[in-house]
Image 1 (spheres, one colour):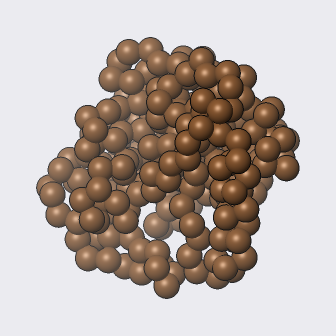
Image 2 (cartoon, one colour):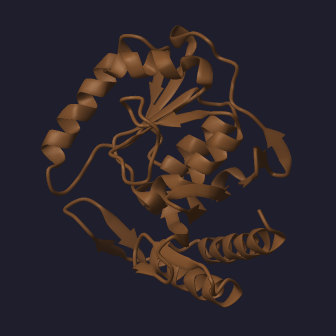
Image 3 (tube, helix red, strand yellow):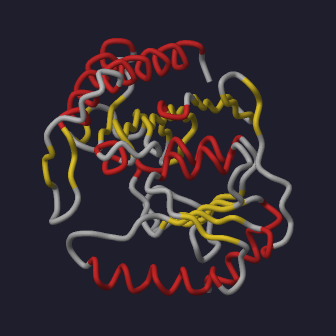
Length: 255
């Protein structure tokens, strides 16, 4: 990845963290019956969009709150605060998630988890945490695995989606060591890359939620696919990321 891209991404994350660092969560703006953004989400996205349009005018932009502008095949993807509910209640698992997408695949990712003092970056085939190289855990048995799962759905069709998620939880509970629900896909995937988790299952696939984390997890050595084991793509239904030695067994357990 070029130094120009890394400099722009660093500046964007610095700007986002400066806005989070004010300590104000701002008012809630509801998007569904139970899902909301805050005024801080909107302020971060607007500021980062403006900065990146100035620094990288040849690259498009997709933000969770305001949508997409610019080039369709080569673009930044930003979740200004991934884990907004956690952020709004003072829970520490939230972060800023920024990816670069090329030909419908994440090719670069950086995540900041400010409450943990952590900053993650993918650089080619390697991933770093606060400047130190990281890799996925060496876990080889499902009975020893810690698996993090995405949150339950809200809004349209949430009842049927949550029935499916409960089924997946039951399948995992019968085979893995422990299950966690952290409330932030950025945290899930960053901690998989850092070796703290052994797999991440997300029954959704919103680009701003997962793209940066997928780039990081891949760079740290994770296998990433859809839940049925087919190759991962941004337009697929879900995400399964795991240490390579467990990936096939998890696909079978969830079938």
